[in-house]
Each structure stands twice: as structure tokens, then as C-alpha cells.
Image (cartoon, rainbow, N blue to C red):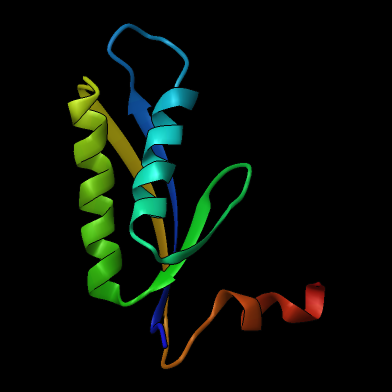
Length: 95
């Protein structure tokens, strides 16, 4: 079971000032490729996994932005770290 929930918002500086949505879509594809459980929300994506997996995922997401030509990337990240944590258990009373 996961020990960490991470929420991330990635804000790339696109090469020619174009819309960031295709870049954000690529970052979400990196998350999807990780096979970790995640939920996409309007302003951020939440992922559950082990801390080391999530830190590696941030690096992969930023690398993918650089490969797309972004000169800089802001990654706003929040972590919730506890023994045996899940996104579903934290929000089930609101569903």
C-alpha cells in the first residue's frame, strides 16, 4: 500500500508562448505511464505511491517538458506522507 499522496501542478514556459495544455497533457501521460493511481483535477493532479516513486515521477515530468523545448518549468508540489494512505480513504466521506 502507498505511503504518500502527492498533488502536482506543472507550469511549463512553452518555447514560443503557445498554449500550455498540450504540455500538461504530456505530463499527465508521464503519470499515466507510471501505472500509479491518480486523479486529474482542474488545477492539479493527485497521485498515490511511495515517496521515492513520486519524487522520480516529478523528475520524469520535468524531463519530458525539457524534451518538448521548455526553457523552464514550475512544479508546485504537495505531499501527504503517512503509513497506509489512500486518496479514496481521505475523501470517502465527501463522495
